Length: 250
Image (cartoon, rainbow, N blue to C red; front, side, top):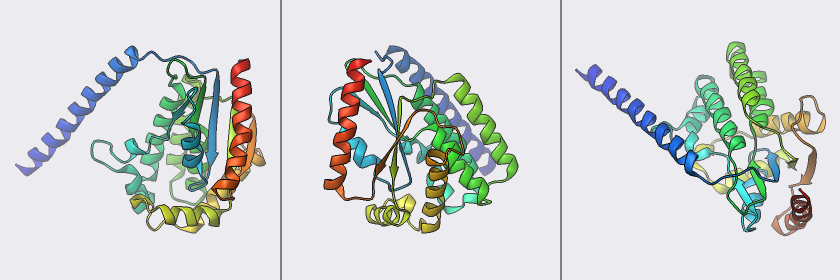
């Protein structure tokens, strides 16, 4: 009896998910979205200051933000994939990675509202592949089979979605600074996050965006994100001038 009840619960979740998909398709078809003149992706380690930068630029009327879809990772019909992956990475990291790549591909394909010229994305499907997936494989968290499937998934998604950018902004940050920020913000899923992970992810970002061991998807500019907010605002102003000038010319 309890087994049947459990199956009924799971089937109910599947029906709700299907209903949600139908609603999303209807909503997407009615949204008056268009292609942005300029697409910029903000890349960097956990705690590098991506959210702070994006919140700063969200105040500009011609800029639209596509946030990393952490909320959906934390609630897939009640399952918190992010927390599951942090608590038991060898069991759940591949599942989170697969779903994260899908949400990033959706973000890449999303247009902007009327009046917006610039689309700023928090990370990309490419950093999911070349930083996070690569690190999971090298550290032995996922198996070779899981790695190959995720790589295939990445190639398929990028072949059917425009995932290029006009500019890639790398917030280069010392891993210790990232760790201090992560511990200070106190997100439940990040409790117990090891410094070693941030050090490893820093190396993956360096290999990808500076050493070019993996292909990039747009021209890369590097901002020193170790500074405090007043100093970082000067870096933001430089980026503001670039965005304004390029978007108006496009």
